[in-house]
Image (cartoon, rainbow, N blue to C red; front, side, top):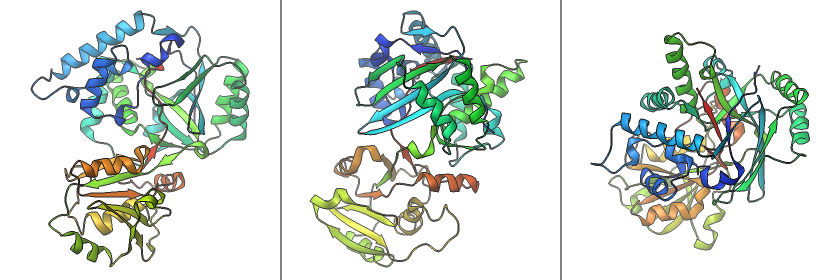
Length: 410
């Protein structure tokens, strides 16, 4: 059972939306975020800064950064960038780019649904990251990045959403990266009640983006209760719920700093034991990988297609993932990379940057690139249902919900 409820956030003013709404936070490095903040002083990302966003040797304390975030947020809430909601509402949020459209419902749901497993997870979280985000909630008190959940399709929900989107949106703008954002406010009692009733029939939702935000909200709620505060916004997650069949999943590719002491010839010889190894012409490289069990490897300026010789005969949905196969057959045994979270020889490249993004990393000195076939949402849901955990950076959902459209204070 999924319990949604209406809420009263600040919503970005239409005339300020393009300047205020943030790019995808994780798509930028700390150095890129620092430059973006300096050149876009009105953007919401200036309220989300962390110590790593500052150059080494010039980093302020975490307390000072959090206080600066508080001050910047207060300025934005008072200078007309936002309008405060005067009634409870549920919101319909639509993102479109390159012919793809996904339309979700933004609301609050009890944090207990994360705690009891009704919200299914597929990634581990890092304790230090949870703690940092929890301190942000304790000090700054703002939630702006909806946690993204997928759910099995519902004709009842679809009908209400379609009805709402026939009307004029309260926001309709295109960000510099080309993502069109539209927002509708739902205050009609019958429509809100209809959505609440329809979602109550959804047994489980699946976390697609925001594992650390969900875990930190649980910590934040515990800290509020410890001070005697009960039944507040901290007891609810700010979420965007999307039908699973509307979400677009891209690959998360890998690059490796060196060959682990092997020569290119030695590496190719070892790879041939498990894979069919096939050089690919440059003008065809972007077509691959074309199926599960394939990887496009970049080595010495060449594109080489690796196709698994035999399927993985394992009932575990986790071990059948292509990223798991890459780790088990190549990264660990041939290149000596066992710590996929902390080994500095391994890095990740989001699929939205395409083959060009992976080639750019190789031109920067990374000796190997691996383009992976995207993990499917069905695979994600199977792994979450089995209470298993994916390797880090197994999925790249695009487009992502943005910070700065809503501000919910706790």
